[in-house]
Each structure stands twice: as C-alpha cells, then as structure tokens.
Image (tube, rainbow, N blue to C red; front, side, top):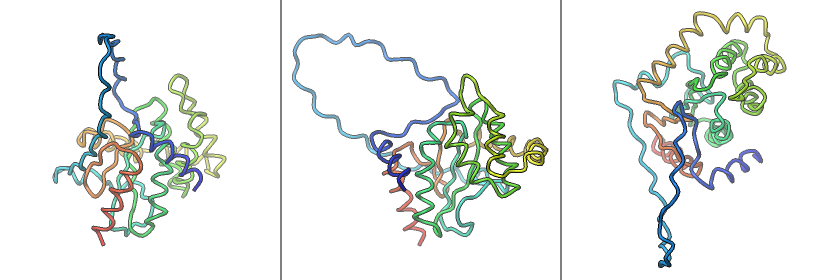
Length: 235
C-alpha cells in the first residue's frame, strides 16, 4: 500500500508520461515576448479529460491473444488490456496503480498483458518472462524487473544477463528457461505482438484498453475513475 500511495502522490502532480518509439520532441524556441508590463494572465483551465476511443470492431480480436498473460480472475466481467514495455520507466511507475486496481476489484477486473519492445533490452526481457511463465513465475518476475529496472534496462548500456540473474533469484530454472525463451512459440508471440501493435496504432507505453476502448493518457485519479465506472456498468 505504501508503494501505491507514493506512486499516486507523484503521478497526481501531472499526467503520467510515457515511453515512445518516436524521438523526443525538440525543445521549444526561446520566447521573444516583449518585456513591457502587461496585465496578469488568467489562470488556465485544467484540460478536459478525453473520452475513451472505441477500437474498430474488426480490430477487437487483436486486443487479446490466446498467448496473452492474464492477471486477476479469468472470469472477471471487465477486461483491462495493458500494453507495456518491461524497460519503460512510465510502465514501471504505473505498475503499482495496476496492482491497486486488481486489489480493489479482484473479481471484477482482469488485466491482460501485451508487450512492446521499444527499447534495446526489452525483447530479451519478454522472452525471459514468457519462459518464466511456463514455470509459474511470470507475475513475480515482472514485478522484479520493474523494481530493479535500473540494473538491466539502461538505454545506453543494457545488461540482459542481469535479467537472467534476477529470474534465477526467483527460483526460475534458468537452463530450462533459456531453451524455452528461444522457442518457435516465443518467436510467434513476438511477431503477433508487433503486428497487433501496428494494427492498433500503439506508439507509446503504457497504453490501456478498457473493454475494447483505448483510454487517454492520464493520471491515476482519472484512470481509476474510468475503471470504477466500467465496473459499475458491467454489474
């Protein structure tokens, strides 16, 4: 709970950032406004929260694949699809928020994980996660990779062997996992993930789809409000 409260305090300050496959925007040019005294500007109105965007019906089958990991009750009425990159700092920051959703709605919400490999070490992390899943270690390893992200996910000097060491510390049979991680099934999974993200036009992580609707990038308060209303509507 303390971890969640800390994340909530930070994230409530502004809309949560995201990791993107695009280059960061160039800095804005210096202001050329006159130095003459002017009347104080009115306080800006807070931006309105965008409405969730429905996914076209023909793309709905691409949201959830049979190979997609599921956290929470498989029988839950509400499905929250999270597209995440294990090496994404914003995904790490949002992880306790997602955990809190599962804590608050254990029977009502299931979280389906889809993967993006927007950073150099991400594909290896996804392969290890899939191999660990076969040994019942998916959720603990995902939590550990987020918690210890700075050990392996440096964008300038990634250390993929550290991923395997973290997995071993959690009891993953590494010899078996190394074989599973390079299997044709995992190759197919990565291919499907990449194709689906292109079709769904996912360009940043984390991205969330709530019962077939793309949520706007927002902070935790609005995020929880979207989930709360969806749960209420499903009952």
